[in-house]
Image (cartoon, rainbow, N blue to C red; front, side, top):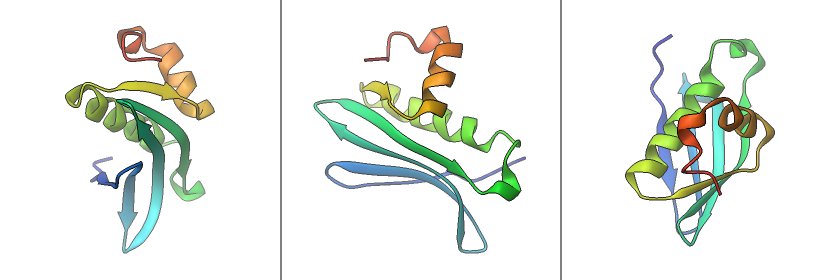
Length: 94
C-alpha cells in the first residue's frame, strides 16, 4: 500500500497523518520539548487496520527525529512495542 504521510507541527505538538478523500484515516501525535519527541498516540481507522499504516507512521516519526537530532520517548503502547522490536532505534530512545 502506497500512502502519503503528511506532517504538521507547532511549537510544542506535532502530528503525522494520512488522509483519504479529506478524511483523516490514521494519525500519530507527539509533543516535543528539549529535543525529545514524546509519541503519545497512534490511531488507524478500523477499515485500514492490519495494513501496516501504524507502523509506517512510527517509521516516519523516527526518520523525522533522526534528521532533527531528537531523542524519542515512545509513550504510546503501539510505538513502544515497535521500539522494543527495533534494536537499531535504541540510541534514539529516552
